[in-house]
Length: 174
Image (cartoon, rainbow, N blue to C red):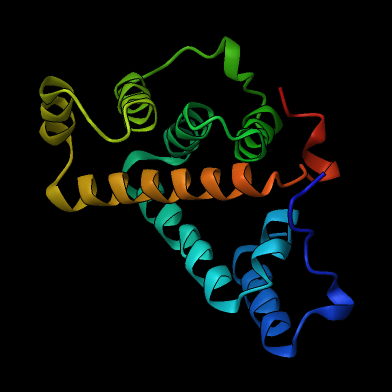
Protein backbone atom coordinates (compact mmCIF):
# COMPACT_ATOMS: atom_id res chain seq x y z
CA UNK A 1 0.00 0.00 0.00
CA UNK A 2 1.45 3.39 -0.96
CA UNK A 3 2.41 5.80 1.78
CA UNK A 4 0.83 8.64 -0.19
CA UNK A 5 -1.86 7.72 -2.67
CA UNK A 6 -1.78 8.92 -6.25
CA UNK A 7 -3.88 12.04 -6.73
CA UNK A 8 -7.28 11.02 -8.13
CA UNK A 9 -8.00 12.71 -11.45
CA UNK A 10 -11.22 14.22 -10.04
CA UNK A 11 -9.13 16.03 -7.41
CA UNK A 12 -6.33 17.08 -9.75
CA UNK A 13 -6.02 20.87 -10.12
CA UNK A 14 -6.44 22.28 -13.62
CA UNK A 15 -2.77 23.31 -13.98
CA UNK A 16 -1.64 19.77 -13.11
CA UNK A 17 -4.18 18.29 -15.54
CA UNK A 18 -2.73 20.55 -18.24
CA UNK A 19 0.78 19.35 -17.36
CA UNK A 20 -0.46 15.74 -17.57
CA UNK A 21 -1.97 16.40 -20.99
CA UNK A 22 1.17 18.10 -22.31
CA UNK A 23 3.34 15.28 -21.00
CA UNK A 24 1.11 12.50 -22.33
CA UNK A 25 0.86 14.16 -25.73
CA UNK A 26 4.54 14.96 -26.11
CA UNK A 27 5.87 11.58 -24.99
CA UNK A 28 2.90 9.30 -25.72
CA UNK A 29 3.14 8.38 -22.04
CA UNK A 30 0.67 7.24 -19.42
CA UNK A 31 0.05 8.97 -16.15
CA UNK A 32 1.31 6.19 -13.91
CA UNK A 33 0.86 5.85 -10.17
CA UNK A 34 4.24 7.52 -9.72
CA UNK A 35 3.24 10.48 -11.90
CA UNK A 36 -0.16 10.80 -10.23
CA UNK A 37 1.57 10.87 -6.84
CA UNK A 38 3.99 13.51 -8.11
CA UNK A 39 0.92 15.39 -9.37
CA UNK A 40 0.29 16.48 -5.79
CA UNK A 41 3.03 19.05 -6.50
CA UNK A 42 3.23 20.57 -9.97
CA UNK A 43 6.86 21.57 -9.48
CA UNK A 44 7.79 18.03 -8.36
CA UNK A 45 5.96 16.56 -11.36
CA UNK A 46 7.78 18.91 -13.75
CA UNK A 47 11.18 18.22 -12.21
CA UNK A 48 10.80 14.45 -12.42
CA UNK A 49 9.33 14.56 -15.93
CA UNK A 50 12.49 16.31 -17.14
CA UNK A 51 13.77 12.74 -17.19
CA UNK A 52 12.07 12.25 -20.56
CA UNK A 53 14.04 14.77 -22.65
CA UNK A 54 17.29 13.54 -21.12
CA UNK A 55 16.37 9.93 -21.97
CA UNK A 56 15.63 11.01 -25.56
CA UNK A 57 19.01 12.78 -25.65
CA UNK A 58 21.07 9.82 -24.49
CA UNK A 59 19.33 7.58 -27.02
CA UNK A 60 20.76 9.82 -29.78
CA UNK A 61 24.35 8.92 -28.94
CA UNK A 62 24.21 5.48 -27.31
CA UNK A 63 21.16 4.05 -29.09
CA UNK A 64 17.71 2.95 -28.02
CA UNK A 65 18.55 -0.50 -26.66
CA UNK A 66 21.71 0.60 -24.77
CA UNK A 67 19.75 3.50 -23.24
CA UNK A 68 17.09 1.09 -22.03
CA UNK A 69 19.73 -1.30 -20.66
CA UNK A 70 21.50 1.58 -18.90
CA UNK A 71 18.22 2.77 -17.34
CA UNK A 72 17.26 -0.77 -16.31
CA UNK A 73 20.67 -1.34 -14.75
CA UNK A 74 20.48 1.86 -12.70
CA UNK A 75 16.88 1.02 -11.67
CA UNK A 76 17.77 -2.50 -10.61
CA UNK A 77 20.88 -1.28 -8.80
CA UNK A 78 18.71 1.26 -6.96
CA UNK A 79 16.29 -1.49 -5.91
CA UNK A 80 13.31 0.15 -7.58
CA UNK A 81 10.71 -2.45 -8.50
CA UNK A 82 8.57 0.19 -10.22
CA UNK A 83 11.30 1.51 -12.54
CA UNK A 84 12.78 -1.93 -13.15
CA UNK A 85 9.36 -3.24 -14.23
CA UNK A 86 8.97 -0.29 -16.60
CA UNK A 87 12.24 -1.06 -18.40
CA UNK A 88 11.72 -4.83 -18.30
CA UNK A 89 8.43 -4.19 -20.13
CA UNK A 90 10.19 -2.20 -22.83
CA UNK A 91 12.79 -4.91 -23.32
CA UNK A 92 10.35 -7.82 -23.24
CA UNK A 93 7.96 -6.00 -25.60
CA UNK A 94 10.94 -5.83 -27.98
CA UNK A 95 11.55 -9.59 -27.70
CA UNK A 96 14.53 -9.16 -25.36
CA UNK A 97 14.49 -11.03 -22.07
CA UNK A 98 16.82 -9.05 -19.77
CA UNK A 99 18.28 -12.14 -18.09
CA UNK A 100 19.12 -13.76 -21.45
CA UNK A 101 20.65 -10.82 -23.31
CA UNK A 102 23.98 -10.92 -25.02
CA UNK A 103 25.65 -7.55 -25.08
CA UNK A 104 27.06 -5.90 -28.18
CA UNK A 105 29.37 -2.95 -28.71
CA UNK A 106 29.58 -0.70 -25.66
CA UNK A 107 26.55 -2.19 -23.88
CA UNK A 108 28.62 -4.02 -21.24
CA UNK A 109 30.56 -0.85 -20.49
CA UNK A 110 27.31 1.09 -20.05
CA UNK A 111 25.93 -1.64 -17.79
CA UNK A 112 29.11 -1.62 -15.70
CA UNK A 113 28.94 2.18 -15.51
CA UNK A 114 25.25 2.18 -14.54
CA UNK A 115 25.85 -0.51 -11.91
CA UNK A 116 28.77 1.37 -10.43
CA UNK A 117 26.76 4.58 -10.24
CA UNK A 118 23.77 2.92 -8.57
CA UNK A 119 25.56 0.51 -6.28
CA UNK A 120 28.43 2.78 -5.20
CA UNK A 121 26.49 6.04 -4.72
CA UNK A 122 28.32 7.51 -7.70
CA UNK A 123 31.83 6.53 -6.69
CA UNK A 124 33.21 5.25 -9.98
CA UNK A 125 36.59 3.52 -10.25
CA UNK A 126 39.05 5.64 -12.25
CA UNK A 127 39.61 2.87 -14.79
CA UNK A 128 35.88 2.58 -15.54
CA UNK A 129 35.47 6.35 -15.77
CA UNK A 130 38.45 6.52 -18.14
CA UNK A 131 36.86 3.90 -20.39
CA UNK A 132 33.62 5.90 -20.51
CA UNK A 133 35.37 9.21 -21.17
CA UNK A 134 37.42 7.48 -23.86
CA UNK A 135 34.25 6.72 -25.80
CA UNK A 136 31.99 9.66 -25.07
CA UNK A 137 32.43 13.44 -25.15
CA UNK A 138 32.39 15.43 -21.91
CA UNK A 139 28.85 16.60 -22.74
CA UNK A 140 27.70 13.02 -23.31
CA UNK A 141 29.28 11.83 -20.05
CA UNK A 142 27.54 14.66 -18.20
CA UNK A 143 24.24 13.62 -19.79
CA UNK A 144 24.75 9.94 -18.91
CA UNK A 145 25.56 10.76 -15.29
CA UNK A 146 22.69 13.24 -15.03
CA UNK A 147 20.32 10.65 -16.47
CA UNK A 148 21.54 8.03 -13.99
CA UNK A 149 20.99 10.58 -11.22
CA UNK A 150 17.44 11.14 -12.39
CA UNK A 151 16.89 7.39 -12.45
CA UNK A 152 18.19 7.13 -8.89
CA UNK A 153 15.97 10.06 -7.83
CA UNK A 154 12.95 8.29 -9.34
CA UNK A 155 13.94 5.10 -7.55
CA UNK A 156 14.26 6.92 -4.23
CA UNK A 157 10.88 8.58 -4.74
CA UNK A 158 9.16 5.27 -5.53
CA UNK A 159 10.89 3.40 -2.73
CA UNK A 160 10.08 6.04 -0.10
CA UNK A 161 6.47 6.39 -1.27
CA UNK A 162 6.11 2.63 -1.77
CA UNK A 163 4.48 3.44 -5.08
CA UNK A 164 2.28 0.61 -6.28
CA UNK A 165 3.31 -0.85 -9.59
CA UNK A 166 0.64 -0.06 -12.16
CA UNK A 167 -1.45 -3.00 -13.30
CA UNK A 168 -0.06 -2.87 -16.85
CA UNK A 169 3.48 -3.27 -15.40
CA UNK A 170 2.77 -5.83 -12.68
CA UNK A 171 3.53 -8.89 -14.82
CA UNK A 172 6.98 -7.42 -15.61
CA UNK A 173 8.04 -6.98 -11.99
CA UNK A 174 10.46 -9.49 -10.54
